[in-house]
Image (cartoon, rainbow over all chains, first blue to last red; front, side, top):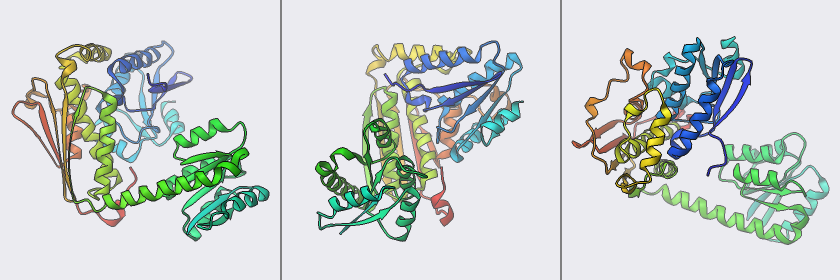
Length: 119
Length: 305
Protein backbone atom coordinates (compact mmCIF):
# COMPACT_ATOMS: atom_id res chain seq x y z
CA UNK A 1 0.00 0.00 0.00
CA UNK A 2 1.26 3.43 -0.89
CA UNK A 3 2.03 5.22 2.40
CA UNK A 4 1.59 8.78 1.14
CA UNK A 5 -1.92 10.28 0.97
CA UNK A 6 -3.12 11.42 -2.42
CA UNK A 7 -4.44 14.67 -0.95
CA UNK A 8 -3.16 16.93 1.79
CA UNK A 9 -5.86 18.99 3.44
CA UNK A 10 -5.93 21.95 5.79
CA UNK A 11 -8.50 24.48 6.87
CA UNK A 12 -8.48 28.24 6.79
CA UNK A 13 -11.72 29.20 8.45
CA UNK A 14 -14.55 28.01 6.23
CA UNK A 15 -12.17 27.28 3.36
CA UNK A 16 -10.74 23.84 2.80
CA UNK A 17 -7.36 23.76 1.07
CA UNK A 18 -6.81 20.55 -0.85
CA UNK A 19 -3.39 19.79 -2.33
CA UNK A 20 -3.27 16.70 -4.56
CA UNK A 21 0.11 15.00 -4.16
CA UNK A 22 -0.11 12.60 -7.10
CA UNK A 23 -2.16 11.96 -10.19
CA UNK A 24 -5.31 10.04 -9.38
CA UNK A 25 -4.74 7.89 -12.47
CA UNK A 26 -1.58 6.43 -10.89
CA UNK A 27 -3.57 4.92 -8.02
CA UNK A 28 -5.30 1.54 -7.99
CA UNK A 29 -9.10 1.76 -8.14
CA UNK A 30 -9.53 0.60 -4.54
CA UNK A 31 -7.14 3.29 -3.31
CA UNK A 32 -8.92 5.96 -5.36
CA UNK A 33 -12.23 4.97 -3.82
CA UNK A 34 -10.80 5.29 -0.32
CA UNK A 35 -9.12 8.63 -1.04
CA UNK A 36 -12.28 10.07 -2.57
CA UNK A 37 -14.42 9.07 0.38
CA UNK A 38 -12.01 10.87 2.69
CA UNK A 39 -11.90 14.00 0.54
CA UNK A 40 -15.66 14.19 0.03
CA UNK A 41 -16.28 13.73 3.76
CA UNK A 42 -14.16 16.82 4.42
CA UNK A 43 -15.81 18.87 1.68
CA UNK A 44 -19.24 17.97 2.99
CA UNK A 45 -18.54 19.14 6.53
CA UNK A 46 -21.13 21.70 7.49
CA UNK A 47 -18.68 24.52 8.18
CA UNK A 48 -16.77 24.11 4.91
CA UNK A 49 -18.04 26.57 2.38
CA UNK A 50 -15.21 27.10 -0.13
CA UNK A 51 -12.35 25.04 -1.50
CA UNK A 52 -8.90 25.94 -2.80
CA UNK A 53 -7.25 23.29 -4.97
CA UNK A 54 -3.48 23.78 -4.73
CA UNK A 55 -1.79 22.06 -7.67
CA UNK A 56 1.80 22.88 -6.71
CA UNK A 57 2.75 19.21 -6.32
CA UNK A 58 1.44 18.24 -9.77
CA UNK A 59 3.46 19.26 -12.80
CA UNK A 60 0.66 17.75 -14.85
CA UNK A 61 -2.53 15.77 -14.35
CA UNK A 62 -5.22 14.07 -16.37
CA UNK A 63 -8.94 13.58 -16.62
CA UNK A 64 -9.16 11.47 -13.47
CA UNK A 65 -7.77 14.32 -11.35
CA UNK A 66 -10.02 16.74 -13.24
CA UNK A 67 -12.91 14.49 -12.41
CA UNK A 68 -12.16 14.61 -8.69
CA UNK A 69 -11.90 18.40 -8.84
CA UNK A 70 -15.25 18.52 -10.65
CA UNK A 71 -16.89 16.32 -8.03
CA UNK A 72 -15.54 18.51 -5.24
CA UNK A 73 -16.91 21.58 -7.00
CA UNK A 74 -20.33 20.00 -7.45
CA UNK A 75 -20.50 19.27 -3.74
CA UNK A 76 -19.94 22.93 -2.94
CA UNK A 77 -22.65 24.29 -5.17
CA UNK A 78 -25.66 23.36 -3.01
CA UNK A 79 -23.93 25.24 -0.18
CA UNK A 80 -23.39 28.30 -2.36
CA UNK A 81 -19.66 27.71 -2.09
CA UNK A 82 -16.91 28.53 -4.55
CA UNK A 83 -13.78 26.74 -5.72
CA UNK A 84 -10.56 28.23 -7.02
CA UNK A 85 -7.31 26.70 -8.21
CA UNK A 86 -3.78 27.91 -7.49
CA UNK A 87 -0.11 27.11 -8.13
CA UNK A 88 -0.83 25.71 -11.58
CA UNK A 89 2.08 24.76 -13.82
CA UNK A 90 2.28 25.86 -17.42
CA UNK A 91 1.10 22.49 -18.70
CA UNK A 92 -1.49 22.31 -15.94
CA UNK A 93 -2.95 25.57 -17.19
CA UNK A 94 -3.09 24.12 -20.71
CA UNK A 95 -4.95 21.11 -19.35
CA UNK A 96 -7.51 23.24 -17.53
CA UNK A 97 -8.01 25.36 -20.64
CA UNK A 98 -8.38 22.37 -22.96
CA UNK A 99 -10.92 20.86 -20.58
CA UNK A 100 -12.60 24.31 -20.39
CA UNK A 101 -12.52 24.13 -16.61
CA UNK A 102 -10.78 27.51 -16.54
CA UNK A 103 -14.29 28.80 -17.28
CA UNK A 104 -15.56 27.25 -14.05
CA UNK A 105 -12.71 27.84 -11.60
CA UNK A 106 -10.57 30.96 -11.33
CA UNK A 107 -6.85 30.21 -11.54
CA UNK A 108 -4.81 32.16 -9.01
CA UNK A 109 -1.01 32.34 -8.70
CA UNK A 110 -0.68 31.15 -5.10
CA UNK A 111 -2.51 30.32 -1.88
CA UNK A 112 -2.70 33.87 -0.50
CA UNK A 113 -4.25 35.08 -3.76
CA UNK A 114 -6.63 32.13 -3.76
CA UNK A 115 -7.77 32.80 -0.20
CA UNK A 116 -8.13 36.50 -0.94
CA UNK A 117 -10.31 35.71 -3.94
CA UNK A 118 -12.65 33.73 -1.72
CA UNK A 119 -12.80 36.28 1.08
CA UNK B 1 41.24 13.75 -14.52
CA UNK B 2 37.96 14.05 -12.56
CA UNK B 3 37.17 17.28 -10.73
CA UNK B 4 35.49 16.97 -7.35
CA UNK B 5 34.07 20.02 -5.60
CA UNK B 6 34.22 19.71 -1.82
CA UNK B 7 31.65 21.90 -0.07
CA UNK B 8 31.91 22.40 3.68
CA UNK B 9 31.76 25.44 5.95
CA UNK B 10 34.47 23.93 8.18
CA UNK B 11 38.00 24.57 6.94
CA UNK B 12 39.24 21.61 8.97
CA UNK B 13 36.73 19.25 7.36
CA UNK B 14 37.46 20.59 3.88
CA UNK B 15 41.16 19.88 4.40
CA UNK B 16 40.45 16.42 5.80
CA UNK B 17 38.19 15.44 2.89
CA UNK B 18 40.54 16.94 0.34
CA UNK B 19 43.42 15.00 1.80
CA UNK B 20 41.49 11.73 1.49
CA UNK B 21 40.53 12.43 -2.12
CA UNK B 22 44.02 13.47 -3.19
CA UNK B 23 45.23 9.94 -2.47
CA UNK B 24 43.70 9.16 -5.86
CA UNK B 25 45.88 10.73 -8.55
CA UNK B 26 42.91 10.81 -10.95
CA UNK B 27 40.99 13.22 -8.73
CA UNK B 28 41.45 16.98 -8.78
CA UNK B 29 39.89 18.77 -5.82
CA UNK B 30 38.34 22.21 -5.63
CA UNK B 31 36.68 23.77 -2.60
CA UNK B 32 33.64 25.85 -1.66
CA UNK B 33 32.52 27.09 1.75
CA UNK B 34 28.75 26.72 1.31
CA UNK B 35 26.04 26.03 -1.25
CA UNK B 36 26.07 29.47 -2.82
CA UNK B 37 29.85 29.41 -3.14
CA UNK B 38 29.56 25.94 -4.71
CA UNK B 39 27.14 27.11 -7.40
CA UNK B 40 29.41 30.05 -8.19
CA UNK B 41 32.39 27.70 -8.43
CA UNK B 42 30.49 25.45 -10.84
CA UNK B 43 29.82 28.43 -13.09
CA UNK B 44 33.51 29.30 -13.13
CA UNK B 45 34.58 25.86 -14.31
CA UNK B 46 33.21 22.35 -14.93
CA UNK B 47 32.85 19.98 -12.00
CA UNK B 48 32.34 16.23 -12.34
CA UNK B 49 31.07 15.54 -8.83
CA UNK B 50 29.95 17.56 -5.80
CA UNK B 51 30.75 16.30 -2.31
CA UNK B 52 28.91 18.38 0.24
CA UNK B 53 28.32 18.70 3.92
CA UNK B 54 24.67 18.57 4.92
CA UNK B 55 24.42 21.30 7.52
CA UNK B 56 25.82 24.64 6.39
CA UNK B 57 24.79 28.26 6.91
CA UNK B 58 22.97 29.90 4.02
CA UNK B 59 22.29 27.24 1.39
CA UNK B 60 22.54 23.83 3.03
CA UNK B 61 23.36 20.46 1.47
CA UNK B 62 19.74 19.58 0.69
CA UNK B 63 19.17 22.87 -1.07
CA UNK B 64 22.42 22.42 -2.97
CA UNK B 65 21.27 18.98 -4.15
CA UNK B 66 18.07 20.53 -5.50
CA UNK B 67 19.95 23.41 -7.13
CA UNK B 68 22.46 21.13 -8.86
CA UNK B 69 19.68 18.80 -10.03
CA UNK B 70 17.94 21.76 -11.56
CA UNK B 71 20.93 23.42 -13.24
CA UNK B 72 23.32 20.55 -14.04
CA UNK B 73 21.48 17.26 -13.56
CA UNK B 74 24.37 15.25 -15.01
CA UNK B 75 26.61 16.20 -12.06
CA UNK B 76 26.10 13.79 -9.16
CA UNK B 77 26.03 15.03 -5.57
CA UNK B 78 27.23 13.02 -2.58
CA UNK B 79 26.28 14.12 0.92
CA UNK B 80 28.48 13.87 3.98
CA UNK B 81 26.32 13.31 7.01
CA UNK B 82 26.84 13.78 10.71
CA UNK B 83 25.44 11.48 13.37
CA UNK B 84 21.65 11.83 13.61
CA UNK B 85 21.10 13.23 10.13
CA UNK B 86 20.63 9.93 8.31
CA UNK B 87 16.90 10.58 7.86
CA UNK B 88 17.65 13.82 6.08
CA UNK B 89 20.18 11.97 3.94
CA UNK B 90 17.53 9.46 2.89
CA UNK B 91 15.28 12.33 1.92
CA UNK B 92 18.13 13.81 -0.09
CA UNK B 93 18.51 10.50 -1.92
CA UNK B 94 14.82 10.62 -2.76
CA UNK B 95 15.32 14.17 -4.02
CA UNK B 96 18.18 13.17 -6.30
CA UNK B 97 21.42 12.92 -4.35
CA UNK B 98 23.61 10.12 -5.71
CA UNK B 99 24.81 8.77 -2.38
CA UNK B 100 25.82 9.71 1.15
CA UNK B 101 28.76 8.96 3.40
CA UNK B 102 28.65 9.31 7.19
CA UNK B 103 31.45 11.59 8.35
CA UNK B 104 32.49 9.17 11.06
CA UNK B 105 33.60 6.62 8.42
CA UNK B 106 34.96 8.96 5.76
CA UNK B 107 38.44 7.45 5.91
CA UNK B 108 37.05 3.96 5.17
CA UNK B 109 34.25 4.74 2.72
CA UNK B 110 34.83 8.06 0.97
CA UNK B 111 37.15 7.07 -1.89
CA UNK B 112 35.18 3.92 -2.75
CA UNK B 113 31.91 5.85 -2.77
CA UNK B 114 33.32 8.64 -4.92
CA UNK B 115 34.80 6.20 -7.44
CA UNK B 116 31.56 4.21 -7.63
CA UNK B 117 29.44 7.31 -8.21
CA UNK B 118 31.87 8.68 -10.82
CA UNK B 119 31.84 5.37 -12.71
CA UNK B 120 28.05 5.19 -12.66
CA UNK B 121 27.76 8.80 -13.76
CA UNK B 122 30.12 8.17 -16.67
CA UNK B 123 28.09 5.15 -17.77
CA UNK B 124 24.86 7.15 -17.59
CA UNK B 125 26.33 10.00 -19.65
CA UNK B 126 27.61 7.55 -22.22
CA UNK B 127 24.23 5.84 -22.33
CA UNK B 128 22.52 9.18 -22.80
CA UNK B 129 24.88 10.10 -25.61
CA UNK B 130 24.26 6.75 -27.28
CA UNK B 131 20.49 7.17 -27.13
CA UNK B 132 20.92 10.55 -28.73
CA UNK B 133 22.14 8.67 -31.79
CA UNK B 134 19.09 6.43 -31.93
CA UNK B 135 17.10 7.00 -35.11
CA UNK B 136 14.29 4.47 -34.75
CA UNK B 137 12.75 2.64 -31.83
CA UNK B 138 9.92 0.14 -31.89
CA UNK B 139 8.80 -1.32 -28.62
CA UNK B 140 5.77 -3.27 -27.53
CA UNK B 141 4.34 -3.78 -24.07
CA UNK B 142 1.60 -5.96 -22.66
CA UNK B 143 0.30 -4.65 -19.34
CA UNK B 144 -2.24 -5.92 -16.90
CA UNK B 145 -4.75 -3.52 -15.40
CA UNK B 146 -2.24 -1.83 -13.11
CA UNK B 147 -2.43 1.93 -12.76
CA UNK B 148 1.07 2.23 -11.32
CA UNK B 149 2.63 0.44 -14.29
CA UNK B 150 0.77 2.71 -16.70
CA UNK B 151 2.47 5.73 -15.11
CA UNK B 152 5.85 4.03 -15.25
CA UNK B 153 5.42 3.11 -18.91
CA UNK B 154 4.44 6.67 -19.79
CA UNK B 155 7.61 7.94 -18.10
CA UNK B 156 9.68 5.41 -20.04
CA UNK B 157 8.16 6.51 -23.35
CA UNK B 158 8.69 10.16 -22.45
CA UNK B 159 12.37 9.52 -21.76
CA UNK B 160 12.68 7.90 -25.18
CA UNK B 161 10.98 10.88 -26.84
CA UNK B 162 13.38 13.29 -25.15
CA UNK B 163 16.43 11.20 -26.00
CA UNK B 164 15.46 11.12 -29.66
CA UNK B 165 14.98 14.87 -29.64
CA UNK B 166 11.47 14.68 -31.02
CA UNK B 167 10.15 17.26 -28.56
CA UNK B 168 11.08 19.56 -25.69
CA UNK B 169 10.18 19.12 -22.03
CA UNK B 170 6.77 20.80 -22.03
CA UNK B 171 5.66 19.08 -25.23
CA UNK B 172 6.84 15.79 -23.79
CA UNK B 173 4.72 16.40 -20.70
CA UNK B 174 1.68 17.01 -22.85
CA UNK B 175 2.30 13.84 -24.85
CA UNK B 176 2.61 11.97 -21.56
CA UNK B 177 -0.79 13.29 -20.49
CA UNK B 178 -2.35 12.06 -23.75
CA UNK B 179 -0.71 8.63 -23.45
CA UNK B 180 -1.82 8.22 -19.87
CA UNK B 181 -5.39 9.14 -20.85
CA UNK B 182 -5.40 6.52 -23.60
CA UNK B 183 -4.03 3.79 -21.34
CA UNK B 184 -6.34 4.62 -18.44
CA UNK B 185 -9.31 4.59 -20.84
CA UNK B 186 -8.16 1.21 -22.13
CA UNK B 187 -7.99 -0.10 -18.59
CA UNK B 188 -11.21 1.28 -17.10
CA UNK B 189 -13.58 1.60 -20.05
CA UNK B 190 -12.03 -1.07 -22.24
CA UNK B 191 -10.80 -3.99 -20.16
CA UNK B 192 -12.86 -3.49 -17.02
CA UNK B 193 -15.92 -2.24 -18.95
CA UNK B 194 -16.71 0.36 -16.29
CA UNK B 195 -18.80 2.92 -18.08
CA UNK B 196 -19.03 6.63 -17.46
CA UNK B 197 -22.69 6.26 -16.54
CA UNK B 198 -21.46 4.92 -13.20
CA UNK B 199 -19.77 8.22 -12.45
CA UNK B 200 -23.10 9.92 -11.95
CA UNK B 201 -23.32 11.62 -8.62
CA UNK B 202 -21.41 9.02 -6.65
CA UNK B 203 -17.95 8.85 -8.13
CA UNK B 204 -16.83 6.16 -5.71
CA UNK B 205 -19.15 3.61 -7.40
CA UNK B 206 -17.04 3.78 -10.53
CA UNK B 207 -13.86 2.86 -8.65
CA UNK B 208 -15.61 0.30 -6.46
CA UNK B 209 -16.87 -1.58 -9.52
CA UNK B 210 -13.45 -1.24 -11.20
CA UNK B 211 -11.70 -2.70 -8.13
CA UNK B 212 -14.17 -5.60 -8.01
CA UNK B 213 -13.84 -6.42 -11.70
CA UNK B 214 -10.06 -6.22 -11.61
CA UNK B 215 -10.12 -9.32 -9.42
CA UNK B 216 -12.42 -11.54 -11.49
CA UNK B 217 -12.36 -13.03 -14.98
CA UNK B 218 -12.73 -12.15 -17.77
CA UNK B 219 -11.81 -8.57 -16.78
CA UNK B 220 -8.84 -9.52 -14.65
CA UNK B 221 -7.13 -11.38 -17.46
CA UNK B 222 -7.47 -8.72 -20.15
CA UNK B 223 -4.35 -6.90 -21.18
CA UNK B 224 -3.47 -3.46 -22.51
CA UNK B 225 -1.28 -3.79 -25.60
CA UNK B 226 0.91 -0.80 -26.32
CA UNK B 227 3.15 -0.23 -29.30
CA UNK B 228 5.45 2.78 -29.60
CA UNK B 229 7.08 3.42 -32.96
CA UNK B 230 9.45 6.37 -32.67
CA UNK B 231 11.64 8.10 -35.21
CA UNK B 232 13.27 11.50 -35.09
CA UNK B 233 10.31 12.96 -37.00
CA UNK B 234 7.30 11.14 -35.69
CA UNK B 235 5.99 9.12 -32.77
CA UNK B 236 3.14 6.69 -33.38
CA UNK B 237 1.56 5.05 -30.36
CA UNK B 238 -1.16 2.45 -30.49
CA UNK B 239 -3.01 1.41 -27.37
CA UNK B 240 -5.33 -1.57 -27.58
CA UNK B 241 -7.54 -3.13 -24.94
CA UNK B 242 -9.14 -6.57 -24.95
CA UNK B 243 -12.63 -5.38 -24.18
CA UNK B 244 -15.61 -5.30 -26.53
CA UNK B 245 -14.90 -1.79 -27.82
CA UNK B 246 -17.19 1.21 -28.20
CA UNK B 247 -18.36 3.79 -30.71
CA UNK B 248 -16.41 7.05 -30.16
CA UNK B 249 -19.07 8.98 -32.07
CA UNK B 250 -21.53 8.31 -29.26
CA UNK B 251 -19.54 10.44 -26.83
CA UNK B 252 -21.13 13.82 -26.13
CA UNK B 253 -19.19 16.85 -27.27
CA UNK B 254 -17.39 17.97 -24.13
CA UNK B 255 -16.97 21.47 -25.55
CA UNK B 256 -20.70 22.11 -25.78
CA UNK B 257 -22.07 24.53 -23.17
CA UNK B 258 -24.31 21.90 -21.60
CA UNK B 259 -21.36 19.53 -21.24
CA UNK B 260 -19.44 21.96 -19.07
CA UNK B 261 -21.53 20.74 -16.15
CA UNK B 262 -20.59 17.14 -16.91
CA UNK B 263 -17.12 15.68 -16.62
CA UNK B 264 -17.14 12.88 -19.21
CA UNK B 265 -15.11 13.10 -22.37
CA UNK B 266 -12.30 15.28 -21.05
CA UNK B 267 -9.79 12.48 -21.51
CA UNK B 268 -10.49 12.30 -25.22
CA UNK B 269 -10.36 16.07 -25.39
CA UNK B 270 -6.88 16.09 -23.87
CA UNK B 271 -5.71 13.39 -26.27
CA UNK B 272 -6.99 15.37 -29.26
CA UNK B 273 -5.47 18.60 -27.99
CA UNK B 274 -2.02 17.24 -27.24
CA UNK B 275 -1.48 14.93 -30.22
CA UNK B 276 -1.46 15.74 -33.91
CA UNK B 277 -3.66 12.82 -34.94
CA UNK B 278 -5.88 10.40 -33.13
CA UNK B 279 -7.65 7.47 -34.78
CA UNK B 280 -9.84 4.70 -33.41
CA UNK B 281 -10.19 1.33 -35.06
CA UNK B 282 -13.64 0.23 -36.20
CA UNK B 283 -14.24 -1.87 -33.06
CA UNK B 284 -13.33 1.01 -30.81
CA UNK B 285 -10.83 -0.97 -28.74
CA UNK B 286 -7.70 0.51 -30.21
CA UNK B 287 -6.57 4.10 -30.45
CA UNK B 288 -3.60 5.36 -32.43
CA UNK B 289 -1.95 8.61 -31.35
CA UNK B 290 0.48 10.43 -33.60
CA UNK B 291 2.84 13.24 -32.71
CA UNK B 292 5.05 14.79 -35.33
CA UNK B 293 8.15 16.78 -34.78
CA UNK B 294 7.42 20.45 -35.24
CA UNK B 295 10.05 23.10 -35.84
CA UNK B 296 10.26 24.96 -32.55
CA UNK B 297 11.64 28.41 -32.01
CA UNK B 298 14.87 28.23 -29.99
CA UNK B 299 13.23 29.96 -27.01
CA UNK B 300 10.63 27.23 -26.58
CA UNK B 301 13.16 24.36 -26.52
CA UNK B 302 13.68 25.14 -22.84
CA UNK B 303 10.01 25.80 -22.14
CA UNK B 304 9.33 24.87 -18.57
CA UNK B 305 6.44 22.50 -18.12
